[in-house]
Length: 415
Image (tube, rainbow, N blue to C red; front, side):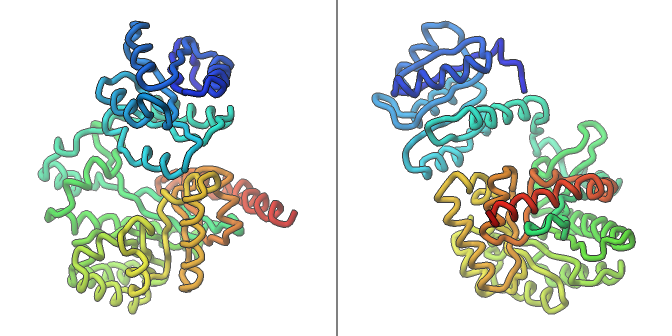
């Protein structure tokens, strides 16, 4: 963890008891400056009178007199008065969900987390560790518009777009069941870039089809290598775009390239989102049926965030239901997330499809997934996306850990 000796924190809390409690926690973590305010108005006054300008961290309650937490957050963002933010509340957890959806990172202020009161030292340590990750691991996001189509086309021709793979683990056993292919750009100057840097420019352009086929080809080639290495049950999941899915000729090319690599269709799962299907409903539905008839698996990605997810799930031949991380991460602590997660898993089981939880990062959420009978889990608790060459070593290194995770939850359930 960072050395917080030279860091400053402002605690904004109308309850003197809670404020004193938080001050004690931050002092125990050796924060150099611990400021206190009883509401939003007082917080702005404190920042002004102390003359310190920006503080490293603000932790604020939502429900306060004179100026509530939401209004204070807007002031902090507009005036750039803090780098990091933690929000607390003892009210309806859905209010904290609203804060998480406000897009504060876009305004240059990192929301480290939302915490239900009373705040425990473990909650505080978890959120502060996110600050460490942001500072030490997050590269600056480059404006995607800086890369024109000519540069992206050159990158495609030179094979700079590569597939990374994130393991998908059976929750009950800890055994790897598949991987999801995730595109990355090995940029000669900027290093490995995430899809945020190039997908917005490629989508809707003539490059979308060759780009997708390049990722598909790499994924199938690596799948063949893994099967030859003994991982015969592993499957690869590959994302399709809306324009891919609506193109009848493109579907034929997917079938051809799969046959060319000698891969059985049931070893490939095509992932699509509801918004993709809705963009060209009749053609997308027809192509989904055609892919399923060929024997491929189909996954509804980001389930739960669309306006008619249940309708799409009922009329599309999906074999896998991927529950969005928004309903998985923190579900063990948020009753509203738990309700949606539980109902999604139950619905998947009733429809006879495999349920996959995305964004699994906490042990408590992993244990909850086992209790609810979720089939597959994917997320940083298991593994970050990696290059194909790393997968076999990762399996050897993590086999015992993953089996222990599965055993830990099963032992808990038997007690």
